[in-house]
Image 1 (cartoon, helix red, strand yellow):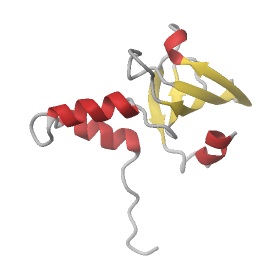
Image 2 (cartoon, rainbow, N blue to C red; image 1 turned 120 degrees about the vertical axis):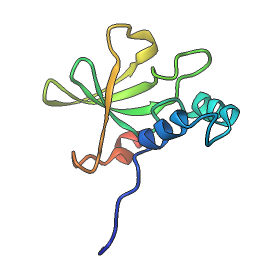
Image 3 (spheres, rainbow, N blue to C red; image 1 turned 90 degrees about the vertical axis):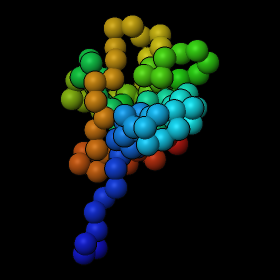
Image 4 (tube, rainbow, N blue to C red; image 1 turned 90 degrees about the horizontal axis):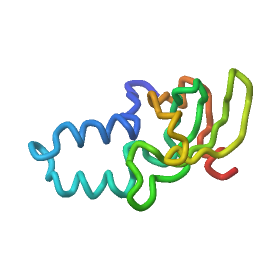
Length: 114
């Protein structure tokens, strides 16, 4: 549509909340939100340190670090893939960055329901 500007990705919105925590937003509310949704909200498309492309399936549970959710790897070494990784149990892998699903023509909903 004319004049349409896409909104922020979920990870970008969370980053803004965290950066302004205690200044513009109540720090307690920001901590609560990030403890529930993690740093990478469900449905985020991420690139892992091993080069894999993955979709975030769950927020970290319990006392797990907010940066280590469960993901479904959808691309590994340039080839289609489909397997789960619990990043909390994979010390050699980490999320490097969020990737815009629209730019990569990925329907994350398909992988959330798979």
